[in-house]
Figure 1 (tube, rainbow, N blue to C red):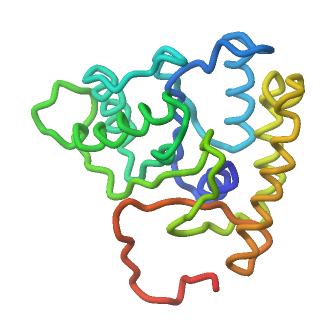
Figure 2: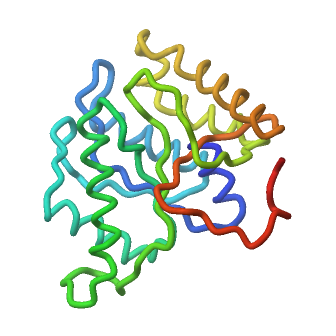
Length: 210
């Protein structure tokens, strides 16, 4: 959802990327390299970034993890949350989604000993980063026309993952293709798909792209 992130930041939203883990180990990376790459990508997108420090590859849906995320939600006063789509082959992704969904609830509790003021984020959406060979069936698409190159540059900032690793060099091409495909579904040059687990309310039809 890099195009959407860049578009939200450009529109003046205070966007925070929360890295649940440091992403390591990987074949061509290390914690220091990944931290530099993540910082570079955040700069390109124009957003802030934090790392929670959960153990990569063994993320678990625990009370401690829920409360840690709830604390970040409260400190940031997040009104909208994005997390991975729950249908996924990656155990970390599934665990993260459970953590974030429950942390949304925990963040509103007034007697929780957490930093920041209680808040219940109004919306929670799923983005698609699935390790399943499945085609997304999104609830809505966001027009990201004009942000394609920003997204591409942010992805390529992770050089250890998408430049040096020969298994992943094709990722940027299929992400470009996905932008074009989903854009074609709503009559724009580029779009990104999202799933809404709760109904969306529209005040009218004037804001619809197509």
